Image (cartoon, rainbow over all chains, first blue to last red; front, top):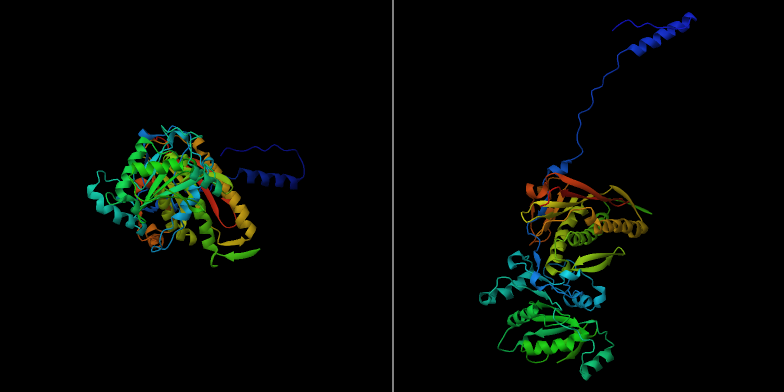
Length: 273
Length: 210
């Protein structure tokens, strides 16, 4: 270090020595501190450990591009989303399903360009829980005869090609029933096709396949349907307005025998044909 | 106002119930907003007094419910550090990760007001953020799928038993490639601090999605 010259005003000796002391302190080398090693906050210790994930992949649901609907409303069947039940507890279908399907359409909104979806989850991706096991038991047997390994359990119908004529004629009996029960014409109703309606020539799976084919031709207005394999029933949901027309179609097209019944939420069976 | 500790009987369960209910709604909404599934399977519902989109596809609903049912015991014991909704491309490489970081205080003060109104408002804010997150994220490639990852505070294998709640819904340790993303972009969405839980949500987005 070179010499440092201190210029100061003349004064007392005490002041001068104090000034010298201060100057010496200022000229002392700065203390050097070693900075701590930088530890990045990311990734955290937990990030270095691999997480857990379900072994089973999420279901694959593809939009059936060829069957996209052109109408502005979506009709989707809401499956029961009951809370987790003990494994041996039976599945509750009726209440939840009915509740949701009884909603007026105005409550359901979806993007118009993709109103039709088809579940294409293969059976091997289904969980092996008892509720699905029951389904498998039913579906495994006739599988040899089916053309496709994919079995759908629910379908959404489009209104493409169907003109909903608001002034379409309801039978007097049906009209009377509507007015007696004060049903809303846009309320959802459910046709139930049971095994008894299938006759001897066909079984419920064959009826379901025929019904599924009708999806392609979009001949059922405002409808969505599902098969309840545990109950051996097919449920076809539609607007009250169209339900008589749908019922007639089901009976003729599916060649059903006996009477099929129409039920609405809370009231139960209100009509049959 | 009552003061409870984690050791009190129902505290962990209460938090787990609230969080799992929220996570169910959030997962449905993420799948809708990020277009992992066709929009036709979603229906508009109301939760936390705001509109949300919920799937009405039985298999998907069951899958989400089963997943959360298994996650619940981990949250209940405060063993879950993060619940991550991973959106993967066709090659099963992650393109987006919605990370819910959860932290629970060891001591808390609970009152009915705290639980019912304040927490609900905070969770509502998360839902609203998720519903508009597509504005800050790039489009995903077609054919995406999703999975849910659970990061535990301890080594995952030690928590394997806790998570195996449903017999037919097994859990495994995730692969490295399912977890790590190259050059992720971090997008913070929302954070909340309440008396019963702290949570933050951010998205890690892969820079090159296609």
